[in-house]
Length: 65
Image (cartoon, rainbow, N blue to C red; front, top):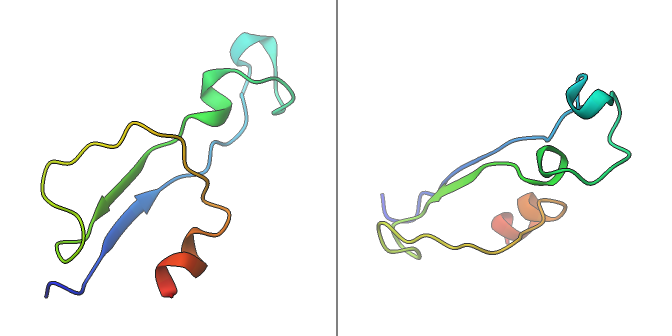
């Protein structure tokens, strides 16, 4: 199934008291750094690590083509 892609990402959530905050109104790492894992054998070689910022705003639409 080389056309199949597997994607995992998450929402950054709330601070939940971290740094004495509850809402996302400051730019600490916990508010902007979320996991994103992809497996797409037809397009991405194994063990590739990309250390760049990405946005998940249009992720679903982009992957759907």
